[in-house]
Amino acid sequence: MGSLDFDAEKTAFRDFYDSNRDGLQGALGSFKTLIEALLLSKSISAISSIDGRIKDREECISKFTRKYRTMLESNGTPYTILEKITDLIGLRVVCLYEDDVERVKDVISEEFNVLDVTDKISQVESTEDSFGYKGLHLDLRLNEAREKMAEYRVYAIHPFELQIRTVVQDSWSIIDHKIKYKRSIPNSLKRRINTLAALFELADREFRAIREATETELERAEKTYPEIEDETEAAADYDEGRSEDQNDNQPSRRYAPLDAFNFLRIAKHFFPEFVFEPHKVDGFTQEIVSLEPNISRGKFNFYMREKISDIKRYQAHFEATGDYTMNPFTIIRHCLYAGDQQLFAHMLTETARERFDTWLQKSHS
Image (cartoon, rainbow, N blue to C red; front, top):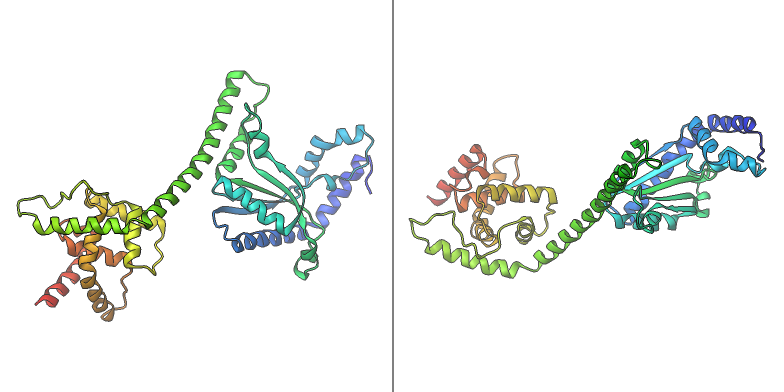
């Protein structure tokens, strides 16, 4: 039961906060774990972070005073401070891409009772000349089914706020809070702030566009292996017909250069069961190109096709005589070296080269 006695309500709120501190922390941990599990179960993996906090006691009182006290008391509306502090327990999900914000919202809305929604994204985007923080805030409570579960029953009394935003939106929020003057300022300064906010918004769109373009390239690369095989035949003909005075580093420029996408397609052809991590593919491809800037995808496939049988035999010998194994990247390194020992000498360490050269001599003698 509320009142209009601010001092009494402050005391009541402080008593509640202090006596429920452990319960609030427990609820925070439980809600965080539940949200992590829900997003994982729906295969929403493009998440930068999920974190949370219990709002500081005196900060809650300051927020109430700033936003609600004058209005409530002038209207003669009894109040409690607790009922107005919807973010006493606060969680934040930071996504990588804009469209993941809505996906997270849909998953959460299925599993919690949504008490209120503050859509700052729509608020900003519906105004032509407005820029600023964009994010989605949900006021939530456990749904009826979870309230009955033993592990959640004790936390059923606690609502909480969930903020969903992108990495860029999160960064802008941090910066925006540090800009102390934003409204009653000269127009020239206001325009500069708006321009900065617009650049952040553009960055969000570009990150999404880059992701979509990358997916398109990967899909296209999946369909190109017949083309790569044709280029491989041309590379084989070139290799056989090359005269001694020709430059070994001069493959035809008519064919597509090796990049991370067609490297991955070729590697998956030879190692279909292996999971190639994108950042390793990217770095490995760059290492190859740094040694042979003009290498084509056909030439790379040629090295793999021509040498992999020998390297597989070497792999069996190598793994039988020691405690080490050769993963697909190591096998590819040996294929390149076997294909052109001068050009790709640095794909192997000196010890690995010596060991492989010794095996080659013995196996061919």
